[in-house]
Length: 458
Ligand code: PMP
Image 1 (spheres, rainbow, N blue to C red):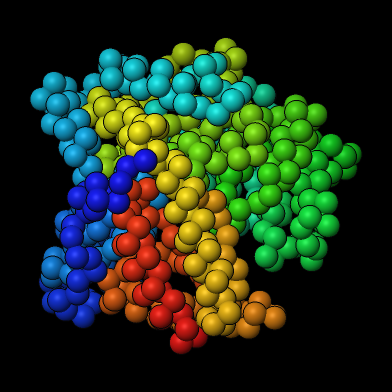
Image 2 (cartoon, rainbow, N blue to C red):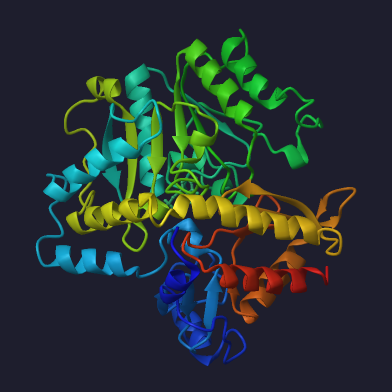
């Protein structure tokens, strides 16, 4: 496994280091400029952070404040920012060719082959890949391809889901801000309960619940008069991301997969956030041993250069008309070479970043769980690998979420102490630890110390 000393060299030294309060004068001026010219609909619109330099699991703002990055650009920088091998790949490829349009290029062909080799069972060695720039593109296309392949139109998705915000994916995503007032959304989408055990919609407790939420999906799909009579696909995150880092028990996915098989619809695993090694396996669905029919990926696969894809069973290819889903920038040779480099780094047996994600993730969860005896607002600690969610509450007994203003205050105080962290969850009260898989252990521990020190005030 890669040593802590080697990992330290990939990040800026001595983080965190704050030289101004946040926002400092340069960030404040840039925020004003952004508000004048950029769309406020951008993610994190009001949060006063702007990054101008990055290295590994650390980043600096234009005022010179140095942060420990527990967000990794929302699970994007799996191998850290500006990894030397990635920089080498960029230099190598940019002098050859970068843009080729959707007429393909050798780097993209090699990548498609490599993606096929690293897919979970069911897709591995028997799939095709369609390339994009964003996760939303991939899920959008999964909706289209599953409709075309099955000749059906409905999609089942889950409460708490985030699959993107384009015209199709918005209908699958459940957050109010993303949906309300943007309609009409595409018809035929039904949302079912996700296995959110901490706030079980059936008010039951795992494992005594017998995974009722999974069985409910089976009920909807395979029972008359549920109106699920034309379902093309079940689209499901293998661990919910924006919905609160919710990690269901494996049986949930296994029951749903069996229900899909019985019904005859496709199982689409959305691994845009949970994939690329984040949970200690290349794909989160591998924890459940479920064989998906399609898998969407993005974020950590591209890292510093945007790249996403939809990988689907080879047999589906027969239903798709040639040239029916072109995309101008798809699988740019530069992005393909970088994606290949990221995959090679994540799967490198000597570095063992997957093993490290498992190990460090356990340590992170252990530290937060241990802290529950003194930090009263921690309600739940969950997740797999380095996809850890800490849900904070005003009252542990009633599970009333910590008020949004207070959660905002925590995030702002974290920022001022040099920790980059983006909350998520249905109530905005889940602090997520999703650092680069290359985060040095002492940086991770420092970030936890700072977080606990702040959380003890709530
Ligand atoms: N699916 C999941 C599970 C995601 O977490 C996201 C992004 N948060 C998307 C899809 C959309 O990806 P993008 O923002 O790259 O379009």
